[in-house]
Length: 442
Ligand code: NAD
Ligand code: LMR
Image 1 (tube, rainbow, N blue to C red):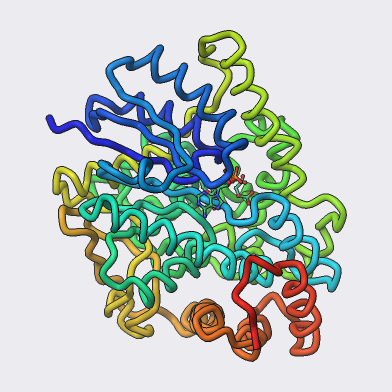
Image 2 (cartoon, rainbow, N blue to C red; image 1 turned 135 degrees about the vertical axis):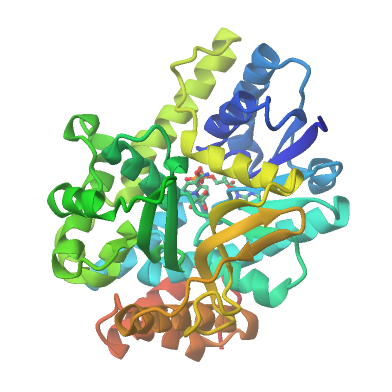
């Protein structure tokens, strides 16, 4: 079997050790000759890299390891770039969340004004990395986890239409894992799903088992009572509390509209007032992540470096990230596996903008991904999606043309923002906060 060379872009990410451990657990189906890390922050990457080097040496010494902040060195001789960058890091994410909240508007990583601000930072970072890949390893594929995926996907569609980039999201997969547990199945792969939407903005319309039996009635019954929480006892860790509430909140969506099963992120668009009321304006998800995941991962990496070996319980192996290996093997081995991915609509949702980047089941093969036809969607979801996709397209317009007006339109159109005046106030504050990260707006 061919052995692959994989570059993790955003080597200093909190997800990198889990991703490396996951890659090492999948070598039988995705053999590796090299694992490389690339980041533009040498200090941050160094801590993670020292631990990864020890882990790889211990578990698979035949795999070559290299961490670099030099794009040529990092991007030369790779087959896949698995990207997970956060332009502006947690310091900027904190502002994305806290600035809108000052105006009683949802403060969230990818939704509403925070997501728009993050998008304006991410576009340049992803394009820069895509260009490195095309220069130094033109046959490689970029599998991109970096958020906000919807805006990044629209930007790469417009600005790098021929690039080999596939934008992906782990939230539907994470939720499908929950569904499988709720149903008592061994794996989400025992379910065949139909789904339509935008990234962080979609609905499951049908879920069947492999024998064709409808699993929706049992799932809906559970979600109506508990949301996507499979078992309360799994949620004793206070660091996961805000996600716990988000998984639970799906039950309120179902109570109002139980035609489909919603993506959890719809909470920010359908219950804006509730979200603001239940947010702590001084301690947001970023603070939770910095005090939790970031601290845990960096402490664990320092311990591995000190001890010179890896204890198995130090890291969460990124189980849902096996998704990225499914995708890589799908491309490498032309498997035609069916996966939920972000892709240009091109009629997959028949009554929706063909140029929109949508999230639908796709077939994965050697030449990329092909969306499956999801047919026509109802007026309510279509209306919500048209509003949201317009926000995403306007952000990309604003980034390309440097237009203040377009970005104000994007904020004003967001369902999370109550008025054009509030949109302007938040925008003006975000512009100040993002100096040096956004193109200059006129
Ligand atoms: P993080 O801040 O810990 O890591 C991001 C890294 O990206 C940092 O080390 C930073 O220096 C680096 N970076 C920033 N700009 C860069 C650039 N232009 N080139 C190279 N490196 C750059 O963030 P995190 O919380 O680990 O999240 C990373 C990304 O993954 C985010 O976009 C997040 O939304 C997304 N994400 C991934 C998963 C997953 O399962 N892999 C899940 C959720 C979110
Ligand atoms: C979030 O917190 O919203 C996501 O970035 C996922 C995570 O746990 O950080």
